[in-house]
Length: 177
Picture: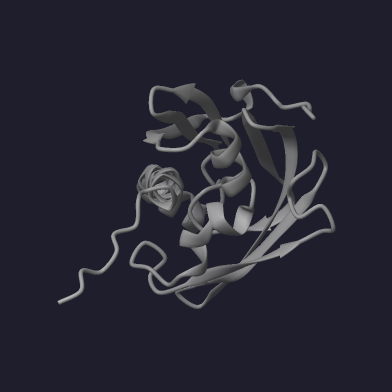
């Protein structure tokens, strides 16, 4: 099922990452349509999150249908964070898009639209992960946003793309002595 999406013009900035994945588009889509797999980098403490992490809360559709809502909550340097996203496009095995909705409490990036596109490629699939976003506008968060939003956006889409690629790499078996 497809959905309605806003135009990129409503966001001032964008970033994307692309990788080749050694799996068919159907398999890649099935794997990353699970938002907890796609966003697993957010659930682990990391340097980019300064030791903070986010957790997911899903509605009955689990973020896998147009209109489905995903909630994230967590913390960053002692600041409580929360964001709601709604799925706006769900077109297996080609495309998925989601956007922030409602009141958000985030520190570096303002409202955003994220998604991925998958197309067949030699040896598997070509995956493109993107984010279109705005800077925050309050004084302190606006300064943080101007300084760090592009770095954070690049990290986020790169993590999503490389995690998807890594999920389909052959696993080496241990060699017996």
